[in-house]
Length: 137
Image (cartoon, rainbow, N blue to C red; front, side):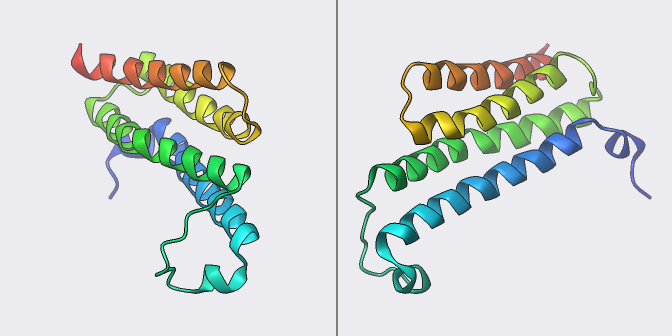
């Protein structure tokens, strides 16, 4: 039997969306690198250590790395808030803010748009901070 607080948590769909974001980043990175190096490279063990040189492939790689830097914190905070039993307060706003900002971040980074992209990243950090605030206080 599943605990009631897990079954009813509005954070679980956000965790699911975050996994979709992870997959999207991974696919974008793979597709842009494959476009640059070809299918044979993609199917290979990539022992040659080649790094992408194209702007789009490089941006996709860096955007994915940036996502992976904050993703563990989001997952830990989401499940921490679920366990703490605060499913509909400030933490939920923070979680939505993180997810929405991370979605907006992808096309901004791929397009090479400065400043706005940085503001969106700050928004995602504010989202994590709101979630953390609920756990600490």
